[in-house]
Length: 114
Image (cartoon, rainbow, N blue to C red; front, side, top):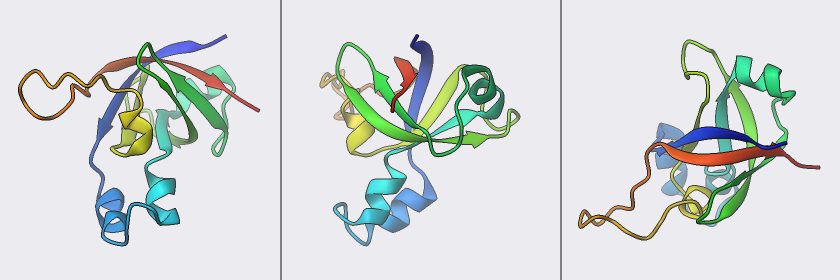
């Protein structure tokens, strides 16, 4: 059964350095399809590092790989992904006049696949 969590896309240093090599390179694709999750949430949900997860909301869906973060580094119920193709599939096109899609605290359904 899918769990609803809050997705927070953002910039990461690894995303920035891999972007310099190119958006179509494996390194960038891997970094932007990795979701970080509170380690206690992962245990509760039966997820392991490297599991494939489907993130889904009314806008779209994407497949990501999960990685645990210390509970002190990421609050319960919240997940992080670096900006990229995966996170963009979950953002509405409305920018509220800012030029940047609204992208913080996106409720998404999270479920393990395969």
